[in-house]
Image 1 (cartoon, rainbow, N blue to C red):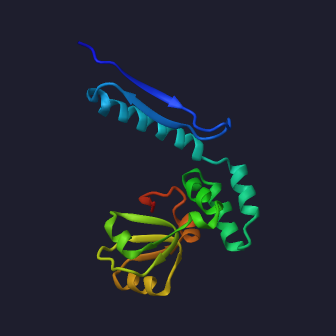
Image 2: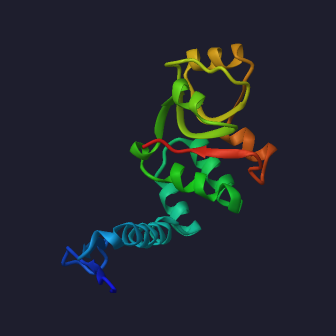
Length: 172
């Protein structure tokens, strides 16, 4: 016997450009796992296509920035496709940049890029490369004491234009 289930995409807003909300109506729990996976893939694809910015949009957002060092970093990052995601995040509003503690960095593996400031709460136990927009004084001291390589994003773009071996640390 075949059990039927439906996947429904509904728009909950009256605006044409608004984000769709994905809902699942299912008749039998047998299909729940499959439908949830389909829903997750649809949302993921939508969000990926929605979140990428053009280089023109990045340039327009960078024009509004008052920090000349930040504007220079954004311009050099957007020229290189592997650093474009970093340029997008730096060009976006300041509230989107995250302050990340050493304890969160310690949970990850490998060399990381932090799009924001590294703060000193917690300890780091592994030797690695930490690339960030900014470091607090205590965090920089702790990282150097642990034997980590501390580099700003602008220096790393010049050294490693292909962004090899680096993982963007996303918080929240």
